[in-house]
Image (cartoon, rainbow, N blue to C red):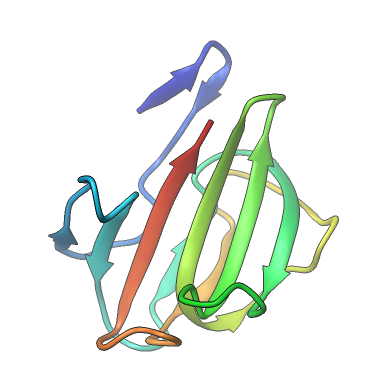
Length: 111
């Protein structure tokens, strides 16, 4: 995936896509097992790591360049902190079901 020149995104988790982007689902859902790794899709800076946004559970948001943010929701354990710099492929969380009916990663790309 290429979001903009200079930013190449990689797949954030292994698993089957169980929810596709549409009018009501503003990202994709990837099924998995509790504890499986969630990886940063690209180099960036963590701009949010917490669970204060209702409906997303344990959430990590990473800013890439000036225009893009990736969001990783419903994690079990967060492994990064606000302000931390991360590399593409770095383990940032473990998969879980926080604020979700089943174990999954809800992944969004925001412009």
